[in-house]
Length: 62
Image 1 (spheres, rainbow, N blue to C red):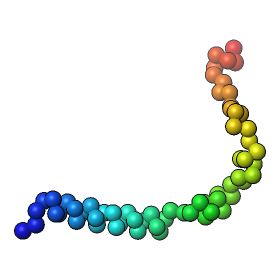
Image 2 (cartoon, rainbow, N blue to C red):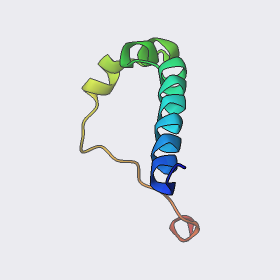
Image 3 (cartoon, helix red, strand yellow):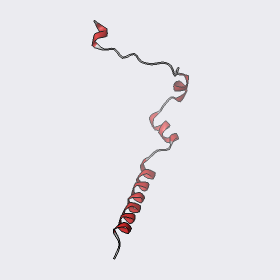
Image 4 (cartoon, rainbow, N blue to C red):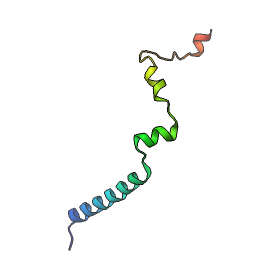
């Protein structure tokens, strides 16, 4: 008869294998991600890190 601890351990290992397979199949590498989204990293690198967007509120307009 299997103990509850052994059953839990086997279930966690099985879940890990399923998740690992899913990640390997569906997650993109950094290079694939850049190509898929056509991100212009040169533009991002030129951006000033101190730059920020000022959000306006209704009170600002009055």
